[in-house]
Length: 217
Image (cartoon, rainbow, N blue to C red):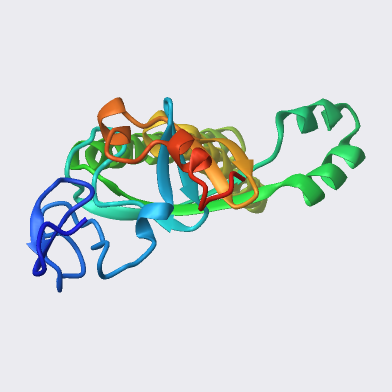
């Protein structure tokens, strides 16, 4: 909402900016004047963040509610929980996933604290991978010193498997799981993991649903 003809108040941090600017200098939030309809893509629903798929969240970290240092693209895959029951029948499970799985993508800012944790945990995971790989190759070389080709190819296979494990472990680390998908309804996505202060920046989802000019998903 503009306070007068030449200025508009940032919906994220409350700063008054010229109506001609594209983003707020303080928090990086796109201007409501420059991007009509941006306020209709991000809401809060209790402890959850409700966004339209493929939304760019403001340059405020949702995990700490602090100004962001960098922006990251997040890609998630989600399907209803009942699908896990079909793991007893793998063929049915993969068939169901093909029809009911949703691809969720969004971008968000991360604070320096979160960026540091992600980098630290990445170094730890790959450091352990390197240590285990070297120990494995050393063990193979000392137990089978004459079987050079056998040791070489078996070592490559083990290192490759350890790499896959390292990638999977890294993706599941708390520092790398930037918000989790709670549910998906049509093109609306509910995300869990935001701190309360961050959620307070956005309008309430219940008010949007009750508004006569909008339709709930």
